[in-house]
Length: 150
Ligand code: ADP
Image (cartoon, rainbow, N blue to C red; front, top):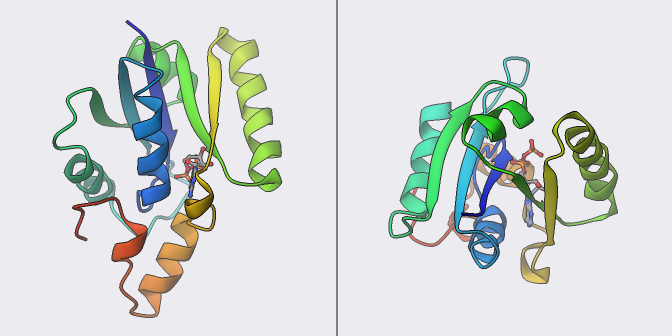
């Protein structure tokens, strides 16, 4: 059984995140999406709302589980018995950040990070831009996974 976690803040979960998970299901038997609760990070959406959006997106996908966590990512991975961390990469900006965390996690526990490049059509999608649009009253349905309503 190959299980991966897909950790993130997901404030909110976008179609870019959704695409990474769907493609990850080709590689892994099960993916546990971990919604990180970081006390020092203010989020627009509550953890309950972030979980609800993700559950709506994967309602028909039994191989995807959704949980919140407030520990180190590697401890969350060990808790759910996952040997892989799935992450998505949009740009060189993402690369430096992902490499530092991936290296640290590997040194700490031997866990492997598996990175998928974003689909080009989603490269511009980010939770930050989605939140900006919301703050100006814009509709962000196109940024969300299929069948998700806020
Ligand atoms: P974090 O706060 O941990 O960076 P995010 O919710 O911003 O969490 O992102 C979680 C993961 O999803 C990261 O690996 C990020 O690079 C990836 N990701 C975010 N947006 C996209 C996108 N449009 N396409 C592919 N991957 C993405």
